[in-house]
Length: 501
Image 1: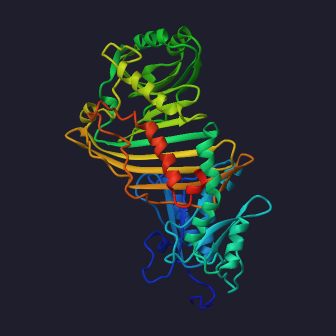
Image 2 (image 1 turned 90 degrees about the horizontal axis):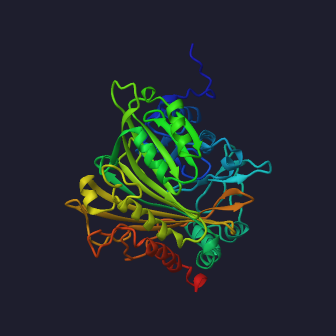
Image 3 (image 1 turned 90 degrees about the vertical axis):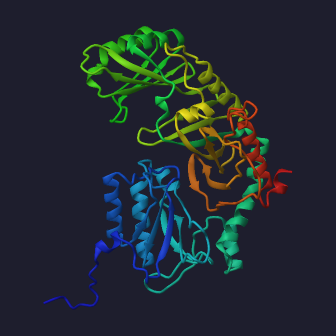
């Protein structure tokens, strides 16, 4: 006889693997999974998908994830607050790295569009033992939602005393105005630091993404028939130490790691410890020699037991004391990334990019078949590489070395190619975002309680990737102007005029 006890509910776990019923009034939670201290999930990885499904069924939540390989955010839906809390805690445990300090302090949670359409947000309350408690609160009043017993209690969500005072003074304050007002309180110090203390800034720039129809490493490469020829060229040019990383194309580049301090030792190590016949079908060397960063693609000849191979070399970066320039093209994607890492004075960034450009054009190493590829922003190379579109998304992350703040400025712009050449049409800035992503205290990142995102600055124009045919430009000269433009945008941000006068 079937169990008729009404208190025993039969849960159908499979229902959480599909879409939620349209008639349900669900709580929603937006989780930004890109915060420092966390490992991104891979939607194409079966184990990660299985873990997400386990969270769905065990915590009784529906989880929406973006399309693509990387899970940059998650949206959780649930019928009850407790289910939403359980789902958040499960995701938090699943994604954080092994470092407990970073894992417990680096998460950033917020609704994507603060407003009345979301019934709840989740905030993290710090506990005395250093852990965090997930609390569902009303977005308009910051009052914790009712628990299962129907009792409501005031939230301890905002660690900022001003936030608590604001909610006490005006229970109807909107979350949007709370974010805006709280951000302005910190903006004076942030803006002044950016303007007056450039030596106290570390700057990380993701300069852009190119959507290609084929990989650029197949264009304008130079090659060697024998690996020994490559060793001789590198040995004559390089000074100091070598950092050598060798790996298989399909196994994550983890076959051999070594540090070699002389060309003779470098050649001897390869002949004694590395057998090309054991690595198939191809592998890569990433070599740091002096201030060069080279990627060597090696493809052994079929049936050859000797060290005969086809080798292609690419200059993928350069570095000096303060700045590092890297370009990369992931194996399974058609994106070409240019990333700049800079410490100390940000004025070194334009020079570093120009030096990198000169090496690519002039060829710092003279290969048998010519020189290194020209900059990927060159119009002719764009045509040869079948570049379809350039998506300009410059993300400047400022970390104040002497101040406990992290500020991110995002600028998005788009340029298209016309007949293989970059369009000379000015592309307006699609959006600018200023986000205070956290504060640093004693080397621990505390998630910021204030956000300032998706703020449009009218009709400002900028060409992050200008046409190379216009006035001899090649796409790099205006990088310094982009940096200045960021400062101007910060100066013109609403409520910040007095901060940088």
